Image 1 (cartoon, rainbow, N blue to C red):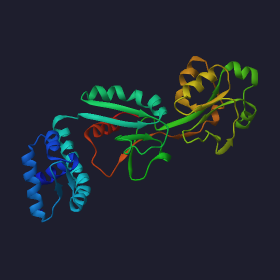
Image 2: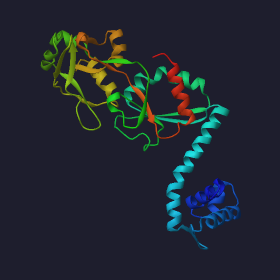
Image 3: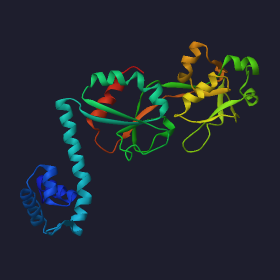
Length: 301
């Protein structure tokens, strides 16, 4: 190798700070030491990397090309060292997860208390939203999604219940007034509480399955709510007798238990696979994320 890691790190610090004094403040290395390291690197490469003046430091063409390749490479080196420190010192740091509201409501409450108790030096930040964002570009370490929403080049780890169902329900008083559906197509004569994704698409058609028969209907209703953020409002409206709701069975379970809602067509509820924690397979796994992965793998589903 034509240059040692220390000289390359000094060049990266000065290039990022656009000056030797600012780089010295952020790195804790003296400005003269940084200057000597950059000069030594330039001598070894036989190329000028920085334009220096009394007012500023700017990259030459060669410097810009080196910086573009060097920054991510040294970032990987730093991540590798952090990973080893995590093994030595125990997991520390911040873990940021991007999750749908349904996972924040139905999956994570059973997991987070035990994880936080087991890892008191990890701070956990949850971003709950329904839009399909690039979790890495959004500054998160990992996300929770369902299999049909997984991005390419990502590693998926099962988290939470492995089988879930979308349930339909209505208030008993509503069903007393309007009748109890015996077939999914009967819902076409009922008021239904609808949802809309962040993309603008409605949560339709509703799909039902029994004994290999699949039925899809286009429900109608006066009330449309945003999926995730306003799901509690939709459930409250169904409890109040506005109409039939279709949402995660686990979301409705407390209302089934209390009698506030009555299951509608339970024999037709369609099962689907549970969610996954997913993260990039193209970079080193940060210690807080590794600790979380190990925790959910060891936890019962």
